[in-house]
Image (cartoon, rainbow, N blue to C red; front, side):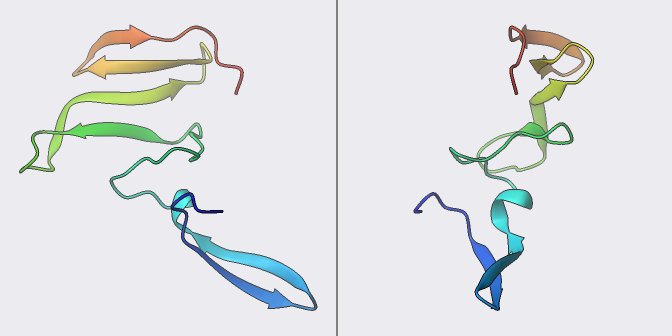
Length: 84
């Protein structure tokens, strides 16, 4: 599949074992098809030239089972209930 996920795998006895994949080890890009798990938080850059953390973050709120966008410490947006 051509989705941008780089996979390092090993084949033993006709069984493919995934050793590492880029979708499970995000750095600074979130691509379509990636899974948003409960531990992942996305943070904006300060600017195009400055990759320091910016004003906005996006994360999953496990208690309310919703996605939230924060603008600094203020809740900027909240989704309806997530079906995971």
